[in-house]
Amino acid sequence: MRNTRERIVHAVSFEVSGLLILTVLGSWGLGYPVTVMGTVALVGTTLAMVWVYIYNLAFDRVLVRLTGALRKPIWLRIIHAILFEAGLLIILLPFIAWHLGIGFVEAFWLDLSMAGFYLLYAFAFNWVYDLMFPPGGVEKRG
Image (cartoon, rainbow, N blue to C red; front, side, top):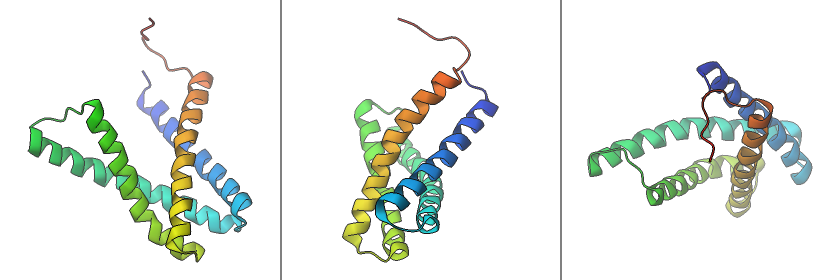
C-alpha cells in the first residue's frame, strides 16, 4: 500500500509526464506550435481534474439518494466511466475548437484521440511506475 507522499509523487509524475508527451506528440502529429498544443493539454488536464471532482461528488450524491448506498457493481462502474468521459468530451469540445480554430467535428476527433491517448498512457505509466517503484505492504499472490 502506498502512503500519501508516494501517492502525491505518483499523481504529479503522471500529470506532468502526460502533459509533456501529449504536447510534443500533438504538436508533431498535428503541426501546431508546442505552445498551442501545450495550452490545449494544460487546459484539458485542469478541466479534467475539476470535472472529476464535481462529477464524482454529484454521481455519489445521486447514487445515495436513489439507492441509499455508495456500492457500485461492475455495470454501474462502466456507466460511471462512460458518463465521465462523455461529460469531459462535452466540456472540452468548445475550448479545443475555439483555441485551435477548427470545427466541432475536427475538435471532437481530437478530443476523442486525447481520451484514447490517456487511456493507453495511464495503463503504460502505471505499469512502468509500479515496476520502478514497487508498492510496499502486503500483496496477495495467487
